[in-house]
Length: 87
Image (cartoon, rainbow, N blue to C red; front, side, top):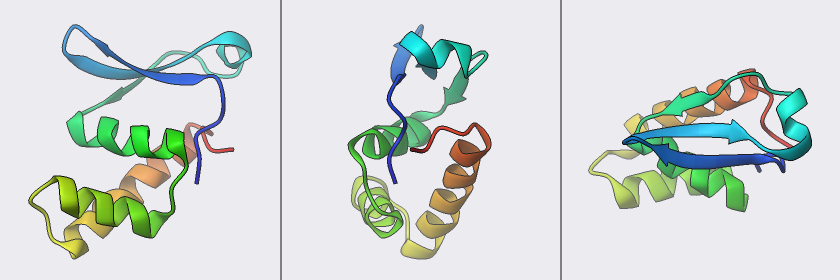
């Protein structure tokens, strides 16, 4: 899974937001607010990563078990899909 070109993650006044740039501005209205965990996952998705690797990265980075990480990753993937941000 990989985030489409034209979307960047920024820290604005202590909050993480996804904003469109270039041609993506006409496709995406507004911003997507993320917490620290969401920003971590989004950065991984910019690079391109599988669901299983996202779960592993989450368990390695945070004190969370695989079952909880799997549930959180699935919820995050759905949020990104709703915004149509995947290639």
